[in-house]
Length: 300
Image (cartoon, rainbow, N blue to C red; front, side, top):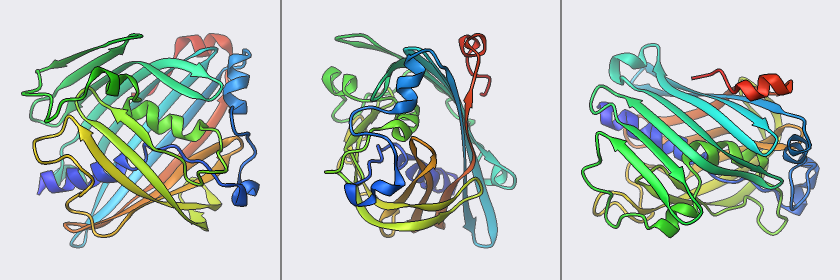
Protein backbone atom coordinates (compact mmCIF):
# COMPACT_ATOMS: atom_id res chain seq x y z
CA UNK A 1 0.00 0.00 0.00
CA UNK A 2 2.77 2.44 0.91
CA UNK A 3 4.50 1.90 -2.44
CA UNK A 4 1.26 2.52 -4.32
CA UNK A 5 0.58 5.79 -2.50
CA UNK A 6 4.12 7.05 -3.03
CA UNK A 7 3.96 6.11 -6.70
CA UNK A 8 0.74 8.03 -7.14
CA UNK A 9 2.08 11.22 -5.58
CA UNK A 10 5.34 10.85 -7.52
CA UNK A 11 3.49 10.56 -10.82
CA UNK A 12 1.53 13.70 -10.04
CA UNK A 13 4.63 15.64 -9.04
CA UNK A 14 6.63 14.52 -12.08
CA UNK A 15 4.15 16.14 -14.43
CA UNK A 16 4.98 19.56 -13.01
CA UNK A 17 8.52 19.51 -14.34
CA UNK A 18 7.66 20.85 -17.79
CA UNK A 19 7.96 24.31 -19.38
CA UNK A 20 4.63 26.12 -19.89
CA UNK A 21 4.47 28.23 -23.03
CA UNK A 22 1.33 29.94 -24.27
CA UNK A 23 0.25 30.15 -27.89
CA UNK A 24 -0.51 33.40 -29.66
CA UNK A 25 -4.25 32.78 -29.38
CA UNK A 26 -3.89 33.06 -25.60
CA UNK A 27 -1.56 36.07 -25.61
CA UNK A 28 -3.83 38.01 -23.24
CA UNK A 29 -2.88 35.57 -20.48
CA UNK A 30 0.83 36.49 -20.52
CA UNK A 31 2.89 39.65 -20.81
CA UNK A 32 6.43 38.48 -21.47
CA UNK A 33 8.21 38.02 -24.77
CA UNK A 34 9.40 35.05 -26.83
CA UNK A 35 13.11 35.07 -25.94
CA UNK A 36 13.55 36.46 -22.42
CA UNK A 37 11.75 36.72 -19.11
CA UNK A 38 11.49 40.27 -17.67
CA UNK A 39 11.87 39.11 -14.06
CA UNK A 40 15.10 37.23 -14.78
CA UNK A 41 16.43 40.17 -16.80
CA UNK A 42 15.67 42.49 -13.87
CA UNK A 43 17.39 40.09 -11.45
CA UNK A 44 20.50 40.11 -13.61
CA UNK A 45 20.37 43.91 -13.65
CA UNK A 46 20.87 43.94 -9.88
CA UNK A 47 17.36 43.53 -8.41
CA UNK A 48 17.20 40.25 -6.43
CA UNK A 49 13.95 38.34 -6.00
CA UNK A 50 12.71 35.65 -3.64
CA UNK A 51 10.11 33.21 -4.98
CA UNK A 52 8.08 31.18 -2.48
CA UNK A 53 6.03 28.36 -3.95
CA UNK A 54 4.03 25.78 -2.00
CA UNK A 55 1.94 22.86 -3.26
CA UNK A 56 -0.45 20.50 -1.53
CA UNK A 57 -1.38 17.06 -2.85
CA UNK A 58 -4.54 15.32 -1.76
CA UNK A 59 -6.23 11.99 -2.45
CA UNK A 60 -8.59 9.58 -0.71
CA UNK A 61 -8.00 6.01 0.36
CA UNK A 62 -11.60 4.86 0.68
CA UNK A 63 -12.94 7.74 2.81
CA UNK A 64 -9.61 8.66 4.48
CA UNK A 65 -7.80 11.78 3.20
CA UNK A 66 -4.17 11.33 2.22
CA UNK A 67 -2.12 14.52 1.96
CA UNK A 68 1.38 15.67 1.14
CA UNK A 69 3.04 19.08 0.84
CA UNK A 70 5.95 20.47 -1.11
CA UNK A 71 7.57 23.84 -0.40
CA UNK A 72 10.16 25.72 -2.45
CA UNK A 73 12.18 28.77 -1.37
CA UNK A 74 14.13 30.27 -4.27
CA UNK A 75 16.61 33.16 -4.14
CA UNK A 76 17.49 34.80 -7.46
CA UNK A 77 20.46 37.14 -7.23
CA UNK A 78 22.44 38.49 -10.16
CA UNK A 79 23.61 35.64 -12.37
CA UNK A 80 22.99 32.89 -9.82
CA UNK A 81 20.15 31.20 -7.95
CA UNK A 82 19.88 28.83 -5.03
CA UNK A 83 16.85 27.08 -3.61
CA UNK A 84 15.76 24.66 -0.93
CA UNK A 85 12.74 22.38 -0.98
CA UNK A 86 10.99 19.93 1.30
CA UNK A 87 8.45 17.29 0.25
CA UNK A 88 6.63 15.44 3.04
CA UNK A 89 3.44 13.66 3.97
CA UNK A 90 1.17 15.39 6.47
CA UNK A 91 -1.65 14.60 8.86
CA UNK A 92 -3.26 11.17 8.66
CA UNK A 93 -1.09 10.37 5.62
CA UNK A 94 1.80 9.69 8.00
CA UNK A 95 -0.03 6.54 9.10
CA UNK A 96 0.21 5.14 5.57
CA UNK A 97 3.28 6.85 4.10
CA UNK A 98 6.30 7.96 6.08
CA UNK A 99 8.00 10.22 3.56
CA UNK A 100 10.22 13.28 4.03
CA UNK A 101 12.62 14.55 1.37
CA UNK A 102 14.92 17.58 1.60
CA UNK A 103 16.30 18.99 -1.65
CA UNK A 104 18.55 21.86 -2.72
CA UNK A 105 19.79 23.21 -6.02
CA UNK A 106 21.93 26.08 -7.25
CA UNK A 107 23.02 27.31 -10.63
CA UNK A 108 22.95 30.13 -13.14
CA UNK A 109 20.33 32.75 -14.03
CA UNK A 110 20.06 33.66 -17.70
CA UNK A 111 17.52 35.92 -19.39
CA UNK A 112 15.62 32.86 -20.66
CA UNK A 113 15.77 30.50 -17.70
CA UNK A 114 17.70 28.69 -14.97
CA UNK A 115 20.55 26.22 -15.47
CA UNK A 116 21.70 23.65 -12.91
CA UNK A 117 25.16 23.64 -11.32
CA UNK A 118 24.59 21.61 -8.14
CA UNK A 119 21.74 19.41 -6.87
CA UNK A 120 21.34 17.60 -3.54
CA UNK A 121 18.53 15.32 -2.40
CA UNK A 122 18.24 13.66 1.02
CA UNK A 123 15.44 11.15 1.38
CA UNK A 124 14.06 10.06 4.76
CA UNK A 125 11.62 7.23 4.02
CA UNK A 126 12.60 4.75 6.68
CA UNK A 127 14.46 2.51 4.24
CA UNK A 128 17.73 3.59 2.62
CA UNK A 129 17.57 7.29 3.63
CA UNK A 130 19.66 7.97 0.53
CA UNK A 131 21.59 11.19 -0.15
CA UNK A 132 22.41 12.10 -3.75
CA UNK A 133 24.70 14.97 -4.70
CA UNK A 134 25.31 15.99 -8.31
CA UNK A 135 27.55 18.71 -9.75
CA UNK A 136 27.64 19.80 -13.39
CA UNK A 137 30.84 20.70 -15.24
CA UNK A 138 31.16 21.93 -18.86
CA UNK A 139 31.83 18.45 -20.27
CA UNK A 140 31.06 16.08 -17.39
CA UNK A 141 29.15 15.70 -14.15
CA UNK A 142 29.87 14.18 -10.75
CA UNK A 143 27.28 12.12 -8.90
CA UNK A 144 27.69 10.55 -5.46
CA UNK A 145 24.90 8.51 -3.86
CA UNK A 146 25.09 7.33 -0.24
CA UNK A 147 24.25 4.49 0.01
CA UNK A 148 25.22 3.81 -3.58
CA UNK A 149 22.63 2.80 -6.15
CA UNK A 150 22.62 -0.90 -6.91
CA UNK A 151 22.86 0.02 -10.59
CA UNK A 152 22.29 3.09 -12.77
CA UNK A 153 19.39 1.63 -14.72
CA UNK A 154 18.91 -0.07 -18.08
CA UNK A 155 20.18 1.74 -20.04
CA UNK A 156 22.01 4.20 -17.79
CA UNK A 157 21.91 7.89 -18.73
CA UNK A 158 24.87 9.06 -20.79
CA UNK A 159 26.95 12.11 -19.93
CA UNK A 160 25.51 13.95 -22.92
CA UNK A 161 21.94 13.19 -21.82
CA UNK A 162 22.59 14.31 -18.24
CA UNK A 163 24.24 17.59 -19.26
CA UNK A 164 21.28 18.45 -21.50
CA UNK A 165 18.83 18.04 -18.60
CA UNK A 166 17.82 20.05 -15.53
CA UNK A 167 17.60 18.65 -12.04
CA UNK A 168 13.98 18.04 -10.95
CA UNK A 169 13.46 21.05 -8.67
CA UNK A 170 15.23 23.49 -10.99
CA UNK A 171 12.99 22.19 -13.78
CA UNK A 172 9.90 22.76 -11.64
CA UNK A 173 10.84 26.36 -10.80
CA UNK A 174 12.27 27.11 -14.25
CA UNK A 175 8.90 26.22 -15.73
CA UNK A 176 7.45 29.47 -14.39
CA UNK A 177 10.10 31.62 -16.07
CA UNK A 178 10.13 30.03 -19.52
CA UNK A 179 9.60 32.52 -22.38
CA UNK A 180 6.50 32.16 -24.52
CA UNK A 181 6.65 30.50 -27.95
CA UNK A 182 3.57 31.03 -30.17
CA UNK A 183 4.34 27.84 -32.11
CA UNK A 184 4.17 25.61 -29.02
CA UNK A 185 1.03 26.35 -26.96
CA UNK A 186 2.19 24.25 -24.00
CA UNK A 187 5.94 24.14 -24.67
CA UNK A 188 8.39 21.33 -24.25
CA UNK A 189 9.80 18.84 -24.38
CA UNK A 190 12.00 19.15 -21.32
CA UNK A 191 14.34 16.58 -19.82
CA UNK A 192 15.03 16.11 -16.10
CA UNK A 193 17.83 14.13 -14.44
CA UNK A 194 18.06 13.30 -10.72
CA UNK A 195 21.43 11.52 -10.71
CA UNK A 196 19.99 8.24 -11.96
CA UNK A 197 16.68 8.61 -13.79
CA UNK A 198 16.40 10.68 -16.95
CA UNK A 199 12.87 11.60 -17.99
CA UNK A 200 11.45 13.53 -20.92
CA UNK A 201 8.06 15.25 -20.74
CA UNK A 202 5.94 16.80 -23.46
CA UNK A 203 2.61 18.63 -23.34
CA UNK A 204 -0.41 18.95 -25.56
CA UNK A 205 -2.55 22.09 -25.39
CA UNK A 206 -6.20 21.32 -24.60
CA UNK A 207 -8.06 24.54 -23.84
CA UNK A 208 -8.29 27.82 -21.97
CA UNK A 209 -10.16 27.39 -18.70
CA UNK A 210 -11.00 28.81 -15.28
CA UNK A 211 -8.76 27.58 -12.44
CA UNK A 212 -9.32 27.62 -8.68
CA UNK A 213 -6.71 26.80 -6.03
CA UNK A 214 -6.09 27.77 -2.40
CA UNK A 215 -3.58 30.42 -3.48
CA UNK A 216 -5.03 31.73 -6.74
CA UNK A 217 -8.06 31.71 -9.04
CA UNK A 218 -8.58 33.03 -12.57
CA UNK A 219 -8.05 32.16 -16.23
CA UNK A 220 -5.37 29.78 -17.42
CA UNK A 221 -4.79 26.85 -19.75
CA UNK A 222 -5.06 23.07 -19.49
CA UNK A 223 -2.38 20.81 -20.98
CA UNK A 224 -2.08 17.03 -21.06
CA UNK A 225 1.28 15.49 -20.22
CA UNK A 226 3.14 12.60 -21.82
CA UNK A 227 6.03 11.25 -19.76
CA UNK A 228 8.79 9.19 -21.36
CA UNK A 229 11.20 7.25 -19.16
CA UNK A 230 14.37 7.52 -21.24
CA UNK A 231 17.20 6.13 -19.09
CA UNK A 232 18.16 5.14 -15.56
CA UNK A 233 15.01 3.16 -14.80
CA UNK A 234 14.72 -0.51 -13.92
CA UNK A 235 14.82 -2.95 -16.78
CA UNK A 236 11.51 -2.97 -18.62
CA UNK A 237 10.36 0.41 -17.23
CA UNK A 238 11.53 2.61 -20.10
CA UNK A 239 9.00 4.08 -22.51
CA UNK A 240 5.83 6.10 -22.03
CA UNK A 241 3.45 3.33 -21.02
CA UNK A 242 2.81 4.34 -17.39
CA UNK A 243 1.02 1.83 -15.19
CA UNK A 244 -1.44 2.91 -12.56
CA UNK A 245 -2.79 5.90 -14.50
CA UNK A 246 -6.38 6.10 -15.69
CA UNK A 247 -6.58 8.81 -18.35
CA UNK A 248 -4.24 11.73 -19.04
CA UNK A 249 -2.22 13.70 -16.53
CA UNK A 250 -3.65 17.23 -16.58
CA UNK A 251 -1.62 20.31 -15.74
CA UNK A 252 -3.03 23.82 -15.45
CA UNK A 253 -0.89 26.95 -15.95
CA UNK A 254 -1.76 30.56 -15.17
CA UNK A 255 -0.03 33.92 -15.01
CA UNK A 256 -0.66 34.01 -11.28
CA UNK A 257 2.26 36.44 -10.89
CA UNK A 258 2.88 38.97 -13.65
CA UNK A 259 5.62 37.71 -15.94
CA UNK A 260 5.40 34.11 -14.65
CA UNK A 261 3.31 31.27 -16.11
CA UNK A 262 3.05 29.05 -13.03
CA UNK A 263 1.80 25.45 -12.73
CA UNK A 264 -1.01 26.09 -10.25
CA UNK A 265 -2.93 22.80 -10.40
CA UNK A 266 -2.45 19.24 -11.59
CA UNK A 267 -4.80 16.27 -11.67
CA UNK A 268 -3.96 12.59 -12.05
CA UNK A 269 -6.51 9.77 -11.97
CA UNK A 270 -4.87 6.65 -10.53
CA UNK A 271 -6.18 3.11 -10.56
CA UNK A 272 -5.28 2.46 -6.92
CA UNK A 273 -6.44 5.53 -4.98
CA UNK A 274 -8.53 7.53 -7.44
CA UNK A 275 -7.88 11.18 -8.25
CA UNK A 276 -4.76 12.88 -6.93
CA UNK A 277 -4.89 16.68 -7.02
CA UNK A 278 -1.99 19.08 -6.50
CA UNK A 279 -2.71 22.76 -6.06
CA UNK A 280 -0.87 25.88 -4.96
CA UNK A 281 -1.14 26.87 -1.29
CA UNK A 282 1.19 29.87 -1.45
CA UNK A 283 2.64 32.01 -4.24
CA UNK A 284 4.88 35.01 -3.55
CA UNK A 285 7.51 36.90 -5.53
CA UNK A 286 9.29 39.29 -3.18
CA UNK A 287 11.74 42.13 -3.73
CA UNK A 288 14.72 41.62 -1.42
CA UNK A 289 17.80 43.51 -0.38
CA UNK A 290 21.13 42.34 -1.74
CA UNK A 291 22.27 41.34 1.76
CA UNK A 292 19.26 39.07 2.22
CA UNK A 293 19.74 37.58 -1.24
CA UNK A 294 23.37 36.80 -0.44
CA UNK A 295 22.25 34.96 2.70
CA UNK A 296 20.20 32.56 0.58
CA UNK A 297 16.82 30.88 1.18
CA UNK A 298 15.73 29.83 4.64
CA UNK A 299 13.29 27.01 3.86
CA UNK A 300 14.04 23.28 4.12
